[in-house]
Image (cartoon, rainbow over the protein chains, first blue to last red):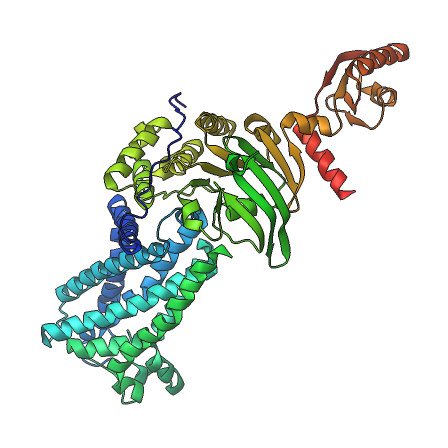
Length: 280
Length: 312
């Protein structure tokens, strides 16, 4: 080690507390935390690309290799693309959980909490970064979908409404992920959740129709929040839909809003409480 | 001593996890500008105490003031006056050293330009300028720890908490961190350092508090602790290990025997008397010694003594 140590002068670096309201520091800190994630992307372009390619690969595999969904009649691509967009949003749960458990495990969150910053910014920054990433992910998937012949037929307003519903689902997954990450605490636990996310995703109408399943399973699938989003999005895009005539299927648009709102209403306070309880 | 001279005051601190009483009435005062060592085995409550003092954890009972400020009621004011080096290197491994320091600087509300300048200053101070743009995961253990230490100094804290700063480092990394800590002390920073290594406390700390089961069981300078418990020791290294038992019988009190080193050692009260008597007794018994030395006890021996005493 080079002998360049100097004793620090006794005068502390004045932290500009008091000047500027608490609220403006909360914004500034949230932005710093968001920039941290953006810096991760810049330093790890390969990881970002892999993250984007995975759902694209799934889309192409189901679209071309399997080439048909259980019980789907007509244009499978038209049915599949909205389903895969929905699944991509649901899988965001894992990404959120993984980042947060890593920060917790390495003590980075402890360091943040020992600093005079707005501690809520830790959660806000994570939310903004994850939502931005999901917007990019959606854009890529929509682009690839369009390239393999998928079309939306109901105009710009409906298109934006569909994107809005997809991001709303992602937002719900974000808060579930934050909560689960703080419950689990360690990155190792994420694997268990990763395994459980798959059956959750496939117990939806993302790829197969509820009508093709045994009645009891079909009912479960129809009430899956993912199915509500997928069905609503298919209708908004004007795509092939295979929803039945049950209440859940005919009110998919209502449920596509109600489910995520309910999940956020449950998991937002739970996650915030968990975060505060880190000091217990 | 006026309260103003005290950087840390801890009174009657208690903290219970589910079924474990981590802190059980911990009392401690640390004078400003000194290095306080907290010495104790795993599970003694060292980390819990540091987490409470650095506002990360709330105590069940008791009072803690850091730089004269109550950590419970005015946590934010405490946070802008302290630095914390936790047990893990709490830095963002994907980012570079400079990016980390700049980010932490912004979160200390230095503003972008000053955060950048402070980052460069610290990189230079810790000899990390050349590797400033590399991702932390490419750093060696010692470098990582130095960057971690740099991050905890961004706001030029009045009080710096170091929780087992060299655990898991190789001897070279340990020396690097020790040198870095020593260089801070001259500048008036108060340092509270926890460690399991007696040597570390001996090397760095002005005052040492030995804690066990969430309580302070002994306090003082390294020398005071050594004197307080058992006094000096005499070591006799024998020529022939077969004579170990006979030599042990000649020494006073409880004798430690070490066959591998062909050594017997005992606690003594008077250095000169013990030395002359031991030499004479060995000569009379016809036992050949390779070396005879009178020395202070090591902190290891002190620690064993203290915890044994407490258990009794």
